[in-house]
Image 1 (cartoon, helix red, strand yellow):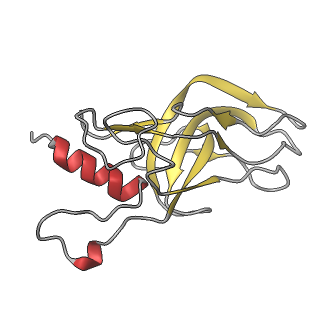
Image 2 (image 1 turned 90 degrees about the vertical axis):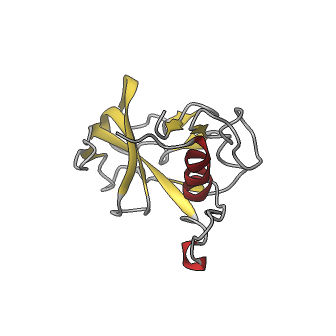
Length: 159
């Protein structure tokens, strides 16, 4: 089994979430920067690494995935929480630098939220990362949109 180097972990995080060129010797210009945004969604039944799961319904509920622009400002560098420079740490971990709000005040019950997903599209698309919530959260009609405080969404590659 091979392990990913800190160099590659940093490059992948900066490319995928932080809007930076891949910066790997021999990479083609077509590699460019990663997605311009990623989209945070909520699950009432968690997926697996292969996908699936049940995302909150968008039909008449005021639920929508949160759009987070891929940038150094929105995702921390691997060297420190809230860092806004290129990653140089050894943790392989990044987190959100600001509060993320998913959807709006619920206009119908969303159910019990059991997990989060990070996607490459505002609807449909591909699941990039997912995680169960530490504590499930029931969202009823009239409840405010769920939020994730700065540094609450942590993503780790490899380590």
